[in-house]
Picture 1 (spheres, one colour):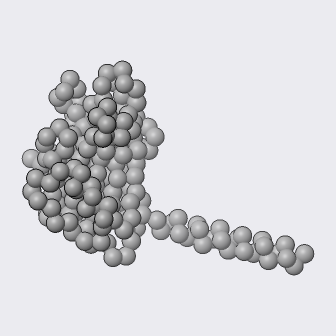
Picture 2 (cartoon, rainbow, N blue to C red):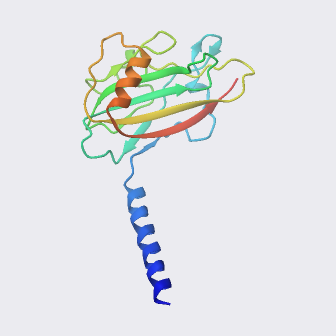
Picture 3 (spheres, rainbow, N blue to C red):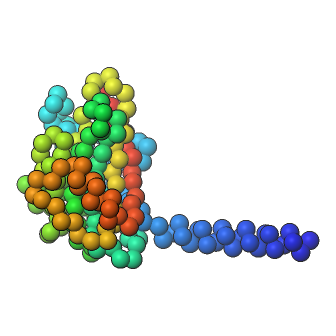
Length: 185
């Protein structure tokens, strides 16, 4: 009987510790997109046969790990028929005191990004956000919106590629959180 009580106590303690760890985990949320759900026309690209609003969604994050010196946000489509996916957005060096980006921050002309941030050239060839535009009839594509807590600001050339940016983000990531939204035409 005593052994069973000890096992139960260990199980309950583990659940409490796990619950506390989950309560403080680094998380990403949005008022515009939801994990596992389809995005709307606002997040569709304008061009390449698409006629959407090309508006980056609102994003918020909380509980960054200790030692975070900056953030990066990436949007990647692993289902693009390129053999290497598609970078829709990479913004780096978001200041460590920032915890959100408003809708439309991916449009550099709107000047909605925090001072010091750098928007990388996406796979459409533009700096900033490029919305979803999967081929017609290709089925649902997954769009991975990820916030990365970084151990330092990134030193990148002005014309950094998506691959180089991704490498530097991964080399300095302390934690990440992702919302995977869907889109099809």
